[in-house]
Image (cartoon, rainbow, N blue to C red):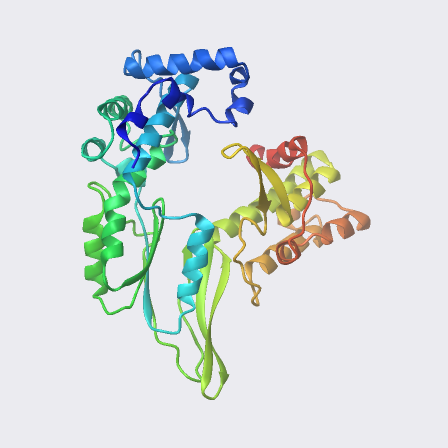
Length: 414
């Protein structure tokens, strides 16, 4: 728990919210004198409780309104609010790869179990502002933190938009604070032996002895006021104890970009083994297929084969990319984005390779490759790229910042 004196909105407290990555996005921070002035301005914003408003701006992405602010001093104050709020959550729901790694271990257990796949419908839009404010006021945060948070939430509500704002520094942290009691409730249930939550995506594994519909109803009652489970991703799957000398398959379910299929495979008369086949989720597979097709459509328009090759390399390989949140490079790509994919017959990576080869070798009359004309050398060059090999062999390709921007352009322009 952060001591109250460390939650102050003073030069030290707010100055600690300046990140090294800001030096790239906000070039004026490079100057120490300008940085000091911006921190002082942020302190003044906090002291005056955002006199003149926060200047919340919104852009529409599909059905969601993403909120942002332009003022760097206000951004610093919002980060400090989030930092203070984070002390109200003692537990963490985990990082994506760690969640999947532990989940796979439980799915391979040979005992009987039940899987619940749930998600909170329109999560940020349905969280109650009044409940959020009341919840924070009962926690170990300063009165100033509550006051500033209340101002931001009230300014958001004044726009007529529902729930809490999405996209601000406070958004994810406040949502975690609101879900903390739900997390604690689930973990206290005696029949639950795995619980994973990543923002609003939830998976629970129990011993299967509970009444399923009743358990889901109790879980729903434990959610923050105003929120509810959606029906689109809701699944309840019973997996029996592994039999001897039997083979069985069970319904597939999706979670965090993956599709999981549990199957029991007969090894001998008295022995079977439980295997979990891991594929890309339907959404993740479709996104990669779409980007592959768009790369070819861009080539059809501009005739730049080198750009097409770069885009296919980007999709089928791994690379280093700068992460401004941690101010260092991290690994990304077909393997690092999806490290738990398996190579069973008919896996997602093979489907992607088949689609790529169809685009390369089909005649220009083929609808997906309409108008795309490649000579034999170009076909051979592209055919050497493979989603499966890029993942299995962890193949790497080096991209400059300029080439990365060029590569991605066609997926947002076309």
